[in-house]
Length: 113
Length: 144
Figure 1 (cartoon, rainbow over the protein chains, first blue to last red):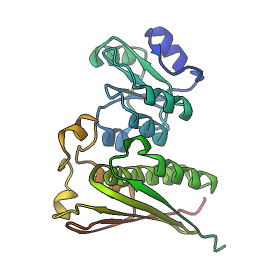
Figure 2: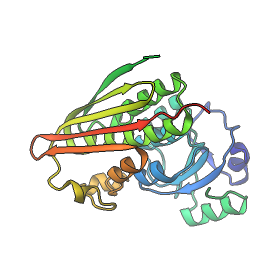
Figure 3: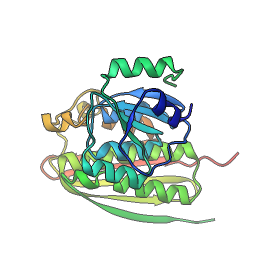
C-alpha cells in the first residue's frame, strides 16, 4: 500500500516537509521500545509510536522503515524533524490513540509481517 | 581478492544527538561494498545496539570495523562502568538503565540479546570500573 494513500485516508498530519510520500508500505509495527523495533520490525514497515525524540529517526533509517506515525497528537522534537528530513524518513501525527489508529491501519489492509 | 577495509568511529557517552551515526556510517560502508541486504540488516542491528550501550552507559568509546572477503568484524570498546555479571546482562529483559533512559524507549533489556541473535560470533569481556569490549563477527555468505 502507498504511504500517500494511507496519509490521505487516515487524515494524518505530515510533519516532514519536502519528503516524497509515494513509497510502498509493506506492513505495520507498533512499539515504544527501540530495541523491539530494531529486532523485530521489517523493512518497509510503517512504525506507530509515542516516542518523539531524535533517536527514532536513526532506528527507522537503519531498519529501512517507510515512515513513523506519532499518536495522541504528540509532536516530534525540532531536531527530530530536521534529522528525519535529512534521512528521508516521513513523520506523521494523528490525534488518535494507538489502539484506534492501528485498528484503522488494519482495516485498510495493513498487516504485521 | 584480499580486499580488506578497516575504519573506526568515536562514541561519546550521553551524546544522544549523534546516537546512531556510527552505525549508519558502517551501514553505508557495507552498502558501498555491495554486501548482501540481510547481512547489512543484521550488522546494523548489532552495531546500533552496541553503539547505544556506549552512549547510555559509558563515558566514551570506539567502534572499529574490519571487513574482509569472508567476514565483518566489529569491535566496540568503551570506558565505562563495566558489567559485573555478563550472563545476567545477556538475559532478555534484564536492564540496569535509569528511568529517563527507559522513558526514551531504551533500556528494555533487549540490546545484548539482539546483538547475540544478529551475529555469528559474540565475545563480551568486561572489567568493572574500567569498561567493556564487544567483539562481534558476521560471516559474509558467498553470492549464489
